[in-house]
Image (cartoon, rainbow, N blue to C red; front, side, top):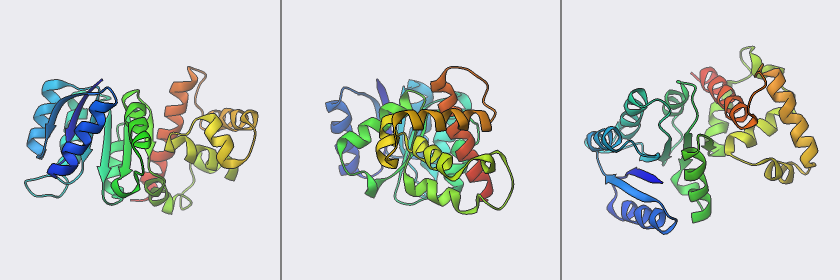
Amino acid sequence: MRVVLAEDLYLLREGLIRLLEAHGFTIAAAVETGPELLDALLTHRPDVAVVDVRLPPTLTDEGLQAALKARREIPGLPVLVLSQHVQQLYARELLADGTGGIGYLLKDRVFNAEQFIDAVRRVAAGGTAMDPDVIAKLMQSTSRRPGPLQRLSPREREVLELMAEGCSNSAIATRLVVSDGAVAKHIANIFTKLELAPADDANRRVLAVLTYLNGTAARAR
């Protein structure tokens, strides 16, 4: 699996390179500026991009802007954002095209290699990997306007939040202390209430999460 990595801090960049290579990834390019990132993404068309938001030359949002431009050229390009802070605008723009293969992790909340590598693989496979703090930030204004998300029960919203984090059915069952069957029933209800037509459940799962995240982002504007 080929990765383009963008991180301006030398030690962190080298550490990420070694971590990814140790888990079987190939580093197609490792860059430290926004322009370099855009060029690398368009040139190498990797299986996944791991991107810091703030890159030289201005250390504002070059990393994300380069990733967004690349996704417009390469629809569905998987992008995992690493950031020090929750930025609602950044998350909303990343979600705006309604496709999968997105993640947003906070650097100081990645506690072990397995957590990070699992997130990279899920995003590369077209899924989502959202830090709970990012989700909570996007949820702040969700109750202000009616919409499809308001059809969900409190328990269904809990299940959908955990789906957005990337949890499997069994992991959701463990977190909520319910049976796997109960989780499957809640997810089926979520698909119905969000009007997701019968299709491959993996695809509907991503679509449900994107509906949720896009809805929360839109209400956080």
